[in-house]
Length: 448
Image (tube, rainbow, N blue to C red; front, side, top):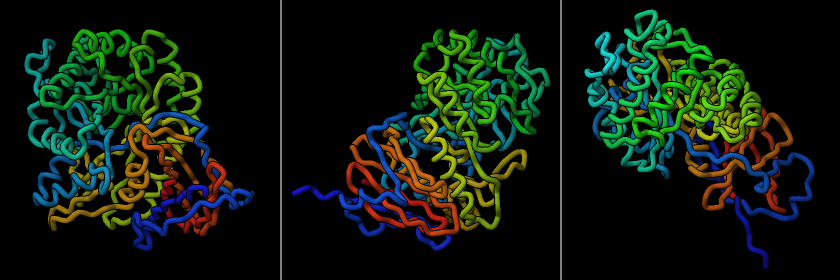
């Protein structure tokens, strides 16, 4: 007698208060595979990139906010983020090098002008709240991978003599800046935090009112090829991966072609990092992959604006839409912006307030889980590190889907319905099918 195959369905209808709720287990039936309409197919013979995991950013804002919560709420927040069973199961996270907009003020780790020997270099500020938060997270996620991103070199290394407002790294300090970045990596390793990788510059084309620095395509290529890449090797850090660009997708293809057109520069880069702030442009990622299938593509930042009313379904839908689009176009990891923020969407030294999946109400000592938390969990909790994206097709573009085979052989299909209509479908896989319905404005994860 053939062995029965079951499908486990987890559903979120945020507006109705249905959050990550297990539905009745369904039996997959061979007879349903004859159906030709309203079908979603999963093909495990079509195999694509390995998915290294999901995560968010350790920022000074997140660390300070966490420290302001009652001890039991601090532990609850860390569990909600990092526990692989009851939380988001984050394993691929980011940290800033020096200050970013979600720091309490501008600072660098070498603020003494002209200190080209970096004799005054220090990460003492990070030892206050940022490093302790990371160390506590590592208890929940022992395999945590962290990459670091600089928002700006010290002001004295730049042509505008400030951390903010763009500006450029002066060419005479390329070597000093490369040594600075390597000293940061080494200092974190001394604290027991082995950084997995580094990006050359956060938002390398952004002239922003907060910490920022602009590199032309050629400037970034030369800095990586002639300075950062060689310095990592000289410093015994050749195992540290380097991602470039770290900015929006609409220019990612041009940036990649410039870097990959130089064999020596390309050799220094593991891949390209992208953000979402100028729209989808998902097909640009597949174009990059088609040119250099040996290189990775990683999503390294996205967030939505602060809204004091909280509880907006749309932010969760935006997260899910982007993750599906990224996964289906060769992205290997997806990293959110701030892990958590306070009730004002901060703190932030430039009033650039944002939302986060977890909001800590520091006045009431309570945690608020935004829609983005629940939508993110449909991916990060069920698509395990090391999963491989597999083929999936759908009968309508009103249902967005992505599928992955986990290391244990289970398959996770995530299905997003952003429309106002309930949509019935039959999920087909390997000669069997299961009927289901996707409610309007819902997200489902189906495990088979």
